[in-house]
Structure formats: C-alpha cells, structure tokens
Length: 169
Image (cartoon, rainbow, N blue to C red; front, side, top):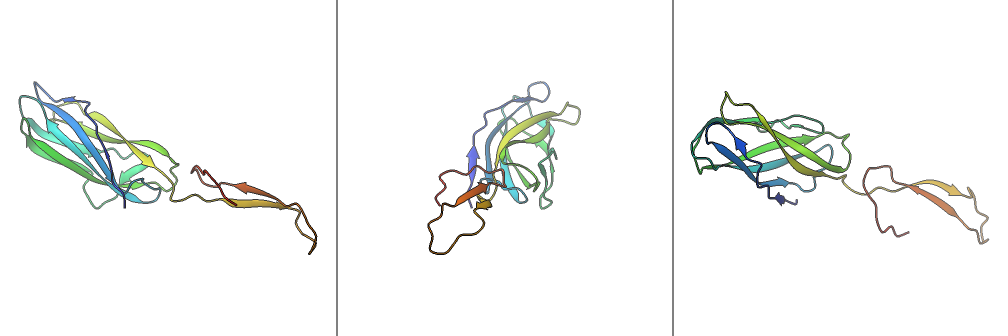
C-alpha cells in the first residue's frame, strides 16, 4: 500500500461576505489508483476568511471514472466553519474498470452556505493499470525442424493501456 500526498494551495472559494475556503493537502491511497478498485482521499479545507462559513457543503461529483464506493457519504455538511478552522474531508471512491491509464480530475462541489452558488474544485488522481502485460501475437515459422538452426520471429503486443519499458526476453 502506498500513499500519495499532493499539496493544493487554493483555489479559494468566496462563500459570502468574507468567508473564504482554502483547499490543501490532497492525500489518497493506495497510490497509484487502479481501474476496478476503490481508494480513499483526504482533503484539508480551511476557512481563511473573516467570518464563519455557515452550512458548508462538500459533495463528490460522480463523473466517469469516479463514483462513490458506498462506505462513506458522498455529501458532507458542516453547520459552522469558523474563521481559521480546518476540517478534513474523506471520501471513498470507486474507479470504473474501463478507465484508461492517465491522470483524471476528481471533482468536489463546494458551497459555503445553502444560498451560495456551488463551485467545483478539481484534484489530479493518477490511474494506472495493475501491471504490465505482454502477449505473443504471432510466431514465424509455425514449426521448426529438430536439430536445425532456424531464425524465429516473435510479434509482441501490449493489450493494456499501460506503458511497458525495458523488456528483456
């Protein structure tokens, strides 16, 4: 199991008069994330404004390849987030098995009060397949005469979306 921590300093969220929320310290594990599995993510939110953020709401946006895994709530509400106060958001997220290897954006919808307009914050999540897979797709010639030197040609393919380097045969 690996953990990955990524520092995000902002963007800020203006939630009213002087309530501002800052998003920091994204951590998720396991790292990297693999298709068909789930992972946990933690995001630190701090009210750096001068007034409290009443009824702060944070919700996981279920958009391919991410969805709520079901062990934790996808919507978190905090009645009062006082100036200078910090909270840790934790989500358990499922990765669609058909997702390809790349960096995808995890989206969290945020509102600092029920009357405020929601803002979407995006966080990079590295998705990688479990392991490299290489397959022999053809061999030429199909048969070899015993005891005779023969040149053999193999054709290899990578049926996954992962990158394979330094192959030794």
